[in-house]
Length: 303
Image (cartoon, rainbow, N blue to C red; front, top):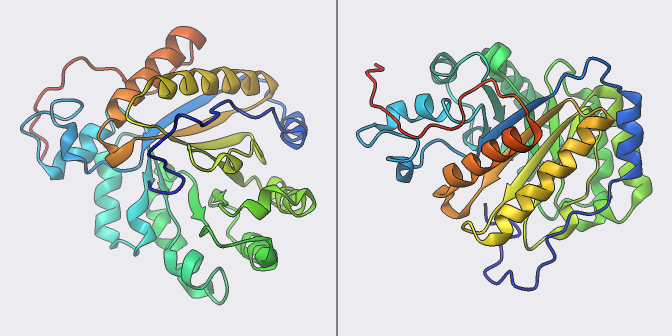
């Protein structure tokens, strides 16, 4: 992920903003009486050959990477769907490769979000959503990432798109233009619509764009895109701050978190992922549906 990445982070204030009053209201409207809480951890891809000897066996092949990925992470920021709709047989193969607890979060077609900018794209959205439903119970949130120059002047197409998007397919929105975080009236109007549908907001924590760390929550589910800097000290203190914040939001009613851990070139995602998993379980006793920490990976005969 190149968006917001800086080479020199020495002057960056990595502290988390105060909680958003709107978000606190949303969580009050969705009280979690039974106390259920799911923390999902993912990365931006499973195709990184540099993970061999880390979470992939040394002799593993690309055809087996997804299997081993799903033994350590339980969700994926599925970027390949941003560039085209995979064939049905490909989606079904991916689905059959991962355990029942796994969730795919496919990114919306760039032709819809970036080229057509949500206008006159009805047929493409239908085709996309129909194909993604092949994941069935393993489908997480559809990731609607808007381009950096998509500002509040285009709020009407965004509202129209969200209103018409199928309510049975969870939708998560990532906004990147700073105007969305300056005009609270527009942001509240958008948030009200998303909250009424159960759609989630994506919060991005990246060095070069602290405004996209907006802390707006529109549902009991939150998606966080965390971008580290090659395991420098601040990566770990930032994770600590996030886990503390999420624990506080959990006490307010937050029910589910998708936490996507990025590192430059993805190479160090297993290391930061292991830290996140170990710290969240040891300090906050969050239970996981998957074995996140494995000292040793063993070669298996899969196909």
